[in-house]
Length: 56
Image (cartoon, rainbow, N blue to C red):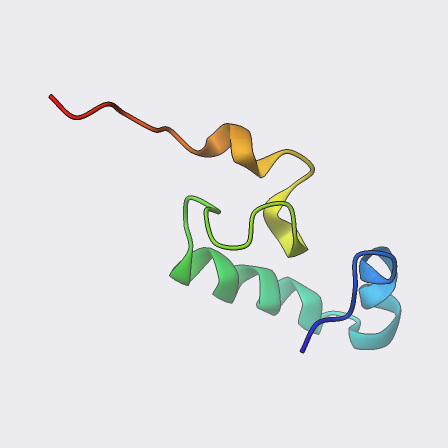
């Protein structure tokens, strides 16, 4: 389930310090922020972090 993009800036009000741990767990499983880009703690432009290389 999601909280929605509109409510995302306020998640800290509900979950407090636990948000820090949520972000840390997300980075453990998705260090390059390629899963669900643009959502959660992926930053405003996580798509820029994705490096697509052509096959040789």
